[in-house]
Image 1 (cartoon, rainbow, N blue to C red):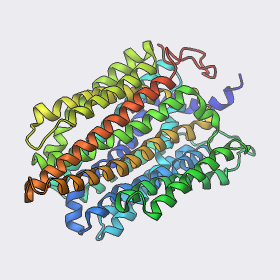
Image 2: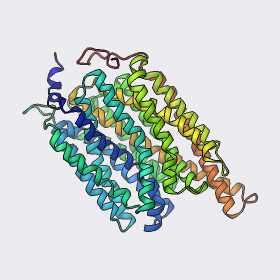
Image 3: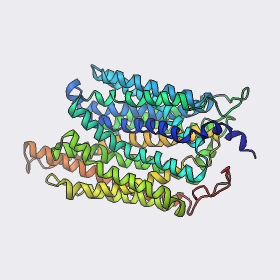
Length: 499
């Protein structure tokens, strides 16, 4: 069978596959929680280092810029030179970058450290997911493994908020970065002993790196994220914003054209043109755009409007985490094998849109139990459906030699979607706050005007996020195949989502 040579690297990992899942899960948790753990620490870091509100977003965006723009390259490097070594280098580099960030004495050093975290994250994240893809090939075991991995992806953000709150309140915001050493170093040691060295290409026939494609997509993704980020600070009409977004369009179109012509493309079009995989990537991107609203704006609402402490804020998100974990456990083992991904992804995104609409009803005098909690539970159920289903099909049926770039596409769509959501929602929030304050200066004064203006900004952001998720529900419902998927290139020949 033609796919047999591509599957041979799986064998050395089979007996240790559940231990390997544990190591990969630790790395995945670190990468995911690091995208939100800093959100809780931002007010304290801003006070300590003295940077402005305009600069605040760059602590988050620097990570996303490096991570999102380099992921496809990182995935391909893992395919070419061996995922074990790339995974370990990524973990150790992430640990060093985190230590630098934790010791930062200025805003500039903190931003550079966050960018370095993103760079090394771009190596380890696709390596982790591709190792999982090539390690678990039995359909029923694969569903369970991807259910665990999807649960980590789903709850990691909430765990980051809670952990960030505890560390910020009882130690220092700096420990929100130092804590990564306690994830990265044990994971690197476990990977060193458990993983098998090797690539998907034999000696003497390793393909060359697609340099033109790499330059085009890295530059295009960087320009895209930077353009949206610059729009928040300087506006949509700013020259830098316009030039960056235009350059992004040109470079990404050029990238697609290059991939259709070169013999060894960075991202083979066969990876993304499958309807289910394409739908999974779209789901991750749109969910990341919409979910930014809950993690940033709801965090600031809880702290600044309701007066929650950092720890209380982290605890407030726990119901969403429990809902995600419970839903993923049920969906990945019982529902997904029976109904397939289409109703679960589309329905989950629709539920998330409803949750955002619930948050849009909040006011300055709302309570947590009646105002916030229902939305968190609905969001958790919706996200559980999306993550369990999309994670299971995002790399399904991919040749082992393409597993790295297919895995990188999951992280790329998440990071780029999150970055666009950050800039778009933050810009609309700032505009709504400013407009409301101007129009209502005669109704409210001082602190009350500031509070009401901020509340109007939060509600605006929640409504926009709801609309984004609703569009995502429709789009994925149209794109994903109905029923339980069977892929011709599945080496087992079994229904890939069935027991």
